[in-house]
Image (tube, rainbow, N blue to C red; front, side):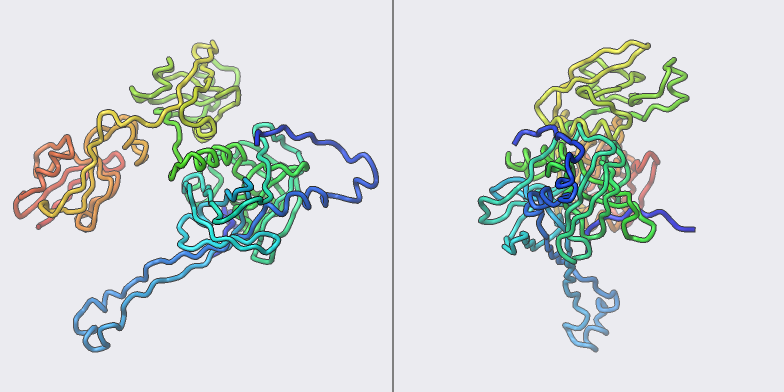
Length: 460
């Protein structure tokens, strides 16, 4: 039996509504997509990225006998070099380019080659592993061809689409198909999550970061992954919508070094038939709120647990990932309109788009050499920390942000919530630091990990 695999595609200016129409003459039919490709292809580039990873050492070479016998330098780990090949799309004449994070996010050297064989050195100015998007800036670029970003909310199933990229490193290639699905979520590999456009235009490894365009040559999305049994294209590919790319470009131009998402401060689940029946609804729709943080802007707008959010800015949301996408597109600092369904009545409420607040102050602390676990980084749980670490909304206590070398050996992990040290409760980073300063010969740490209590005991 074949196993279905999801494969990422990498190898080791206002939006306008497109006007589509049927070809009107034999001359137009004979041209095919040539005029569109001629217009759009120069804005799609090849990306060559080099990633240098530290080498792995053999434990035997830490033994003085083997070191002396084979020589002092024998067994010294050497850096490993990985080369990655992908595609990118030029978004502006001054050299902003979008690609996938899995292509360039960890790269130490990036070279970008245009269709007219010009080469540019590039750097990542804004990257986000979760969305699998990276914005690059080309050094010394000016007057470059670029693609217009289409409003991807107006893309429809059945539209013609072209995928342009560099599959398998053979050179720029164009394939055609249609938009075969919308609002696909949870369908990308790696850390990419969210909302995708689905296409049957053949795309293959090396197409990562390439363009998915409409028949007018406007950018619909960025090709990211394929659903495949063999590793080749089986007619189901996924692209990150252009509207999210537009927000990434806006934040990159504003100088952000990391992508900032509005904070919802809620936990929710998709509506299903059973929940819809229990709420007296004719059809399952929307996202049911199962938990709300007191500081949540959605709570402050008037929502409560049990309410259903059906639309964000007039667009349907039927999963938490769709809702996260809609809020990400809205961006920080604005206001969105969310539709609340409660007791059969619908109401539109305005919700502020804010960052997760640092309230109460996290008091992030890195323990020093005066403690028994130097390098351990802890912070008080608050909305900012909870959002950063992906922790439950109701969490309280002191959170491990980085275990450090000694904490990792003791068994600590990022996301652990410290409850007590040597039987004494700790409620702040300062109390953790005090408890780990001259604690005695043995240490016992009681903590919560993924909802379960764990006790670690070790000798200093």
